[in-house]
Length: 330
Image 1 (cartoon, helix red, strand yellow):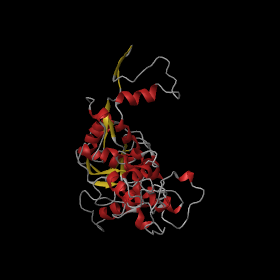
Image 2 (cartoon, rainbow, N blue to C red):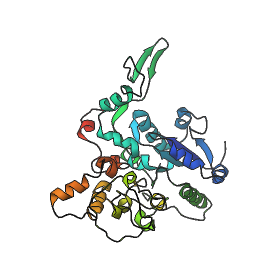
Image 3 (cartoon, rainbow, N blue to C red):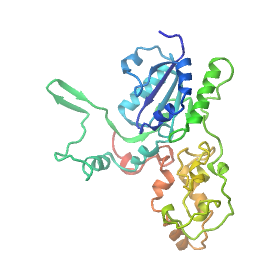
Image 4 (cartoon, rainbow, N blue to C red):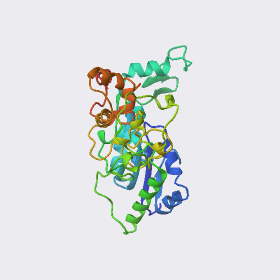
């Protein structure tokens, strides 16, 4: 058995982009192999849960946990990896905020299953739904129980560090890995527990080179509805719903620099209590209207307010979920 410190990575309720982002660090992945013994990474190696259960508590130095907690398997692995890991990192937007899977918190499990198993894209003539336990000739088959509300990792277990992004930028991942390796060699110190790593503390707007003139607008429109977008002027001040004012810096403002609005994948900036509330305030600041009716008309130009304001952050917001989800017993 290697005497190198142990590394683990787990994929819960997420799309897999975080795994790809780690591989996208290029030759830096060799530094991981050189400095760590990779003991659990199901997407990249053959590993069993029982192998992790057999390890001593605290024997894994670093675990990157990506994905939200959508079912009881996700939750069991969160508790297991918490016990076995000295440093547990909520890695990526899904583990930090719930991300796109967290938008399902606006719906009950029945509504989610109806969409998944009874819409035109699904061939399910017998109306089969997943069952936690199914009898087969060989015995009983079990699948994870689906929870009514998706939770973030730190709503289930204690988390040491938070690394946002959908996914985190590869150069940020490489920088964090470099820091951990320096710590192993006694050349650096870890940040305080609970810190956000691999990102800045301010907003995307601070990294965006576009000019802000505090221009007041008369309407919001989808970006594809514009015949011309000024490449130098703030997108929000052109009436394009841009989430930069509330979003944590870390990506380098890649979307606004490419003539696309920020959609908020790095989550709330430092000090933002509720992401959607901060965005509503930012949008209201550029509205040119004096009456409630005119304000409503302008805001109605945002076609999907829930998706605009809570696309990545619903599960971590003050709302968390709607009544349809909360009213269902786990």
